[in-house]
Amino acid sequence: MELEKLNIYSISLDLAEEVYEKVMIWKHFDRDTIGKQLVRSADSIAANISEGFGRYHLNDSKKFYYYSRGSLFETKTWLTKANRRKLIGNDFYQEKINELEKLGKMLNAFITSMSKNMAKEPLEEYKINNQNTNNQNTNNQQPTTNNQQLRTKN
Image (cartoon, rainbow, N blue to C red; front, side, top):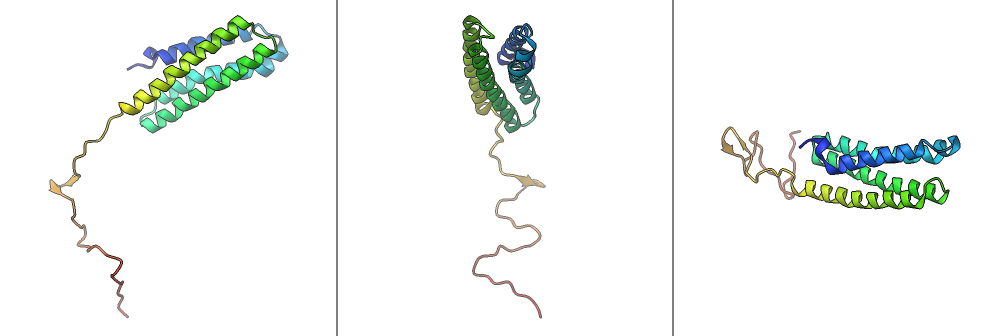
């Protein structure tokens, strides 16, 4: 699988570009306050998907997919602030919120799918030198129990 073929990745890239284009026409103060935060959070959605995709271990990958989900929610908050402050119109706001809702569901499904499809180690017994190691003690050590006392020479 290639990163660029992931729908969640391409959708989040497109969304971030649309947000960026909108923010770039704002006045300096608005760009410097809400605009930077909005662009960073929107950019972070795809960036974290990308970083998670590049990780070798599932738990590492999932951590970044969850970061992406957090950035998605942060982006919704900044869009809401921008809408309340009349920096974006209701149509653009509602369109992006709907896209984020859909993307959030897709991201959750992707995380669930990754967890279910993770490679599972076969339940074979570990063997060393082709010998079954179950119930064998190494280095001629004997198991101890709570009733045994440690004896030392004086």
